[in-house]
Image (cartoon, rainbow, N blue to C red):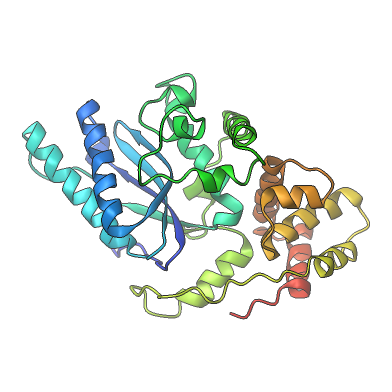
Length: 313
């Protein structure tokens, strides 16, 4: 069976998952969890990655990480092999610990980071290990609420910065957004294109055109092709010509401002008349989903992109 395609470039975001062989336990007690986190600390010094969210479950783990320098495969090979060696020595066992090579979903960070983080942090709640995400000791959730200091490899400011002007406001919004997903059955890997790409049509198209026709094992050294046009007025005019429905026009404007400009979630919300950052993220995600299916929204988004995008791929 062929190995899954790995797309690597500096600055990429990934949702990484690996499970115990035959669904067996990979974290038996506190020492095992602690050792895995210690390995992340150690490897962070060598690879310089950032973990935006994580959750260590008894028989699998989730990492939402950013690779400023690429090297995802080298990092994960080191992490899984070193932990397996340590676990086997400690528990006097032999053989593979994980069911196989890790799964890595390349994520459109602008549209899906908050959704992926929510999914990761709600794992122990939906598995009925705890009633609240902040009660689980082996995830990054408590650090987002300011209840625990982040480890050296953790990055919380980037996600929180999309949700509020102050740290306290952002933490409250993050908590509201996360717990609002308790009834959500959304699965990142199920929603992904080909099981490897989670993003808007524009992101998926960029990845396909940039990487798939080329070598499948190569990492690029720079990202020079993701510059966003800053002409907000031009985008607003283009959206105004698409539809006379004021509610749909507002949603399309939110999507366009987020996808085609450097504006943050909060800045987009302010621009459209006071929409909360969390709501902006939800609108972008929902329209991106609708854009992946044939229909009126897909046609509008394609027309919008032709009008406002000046990205040269």
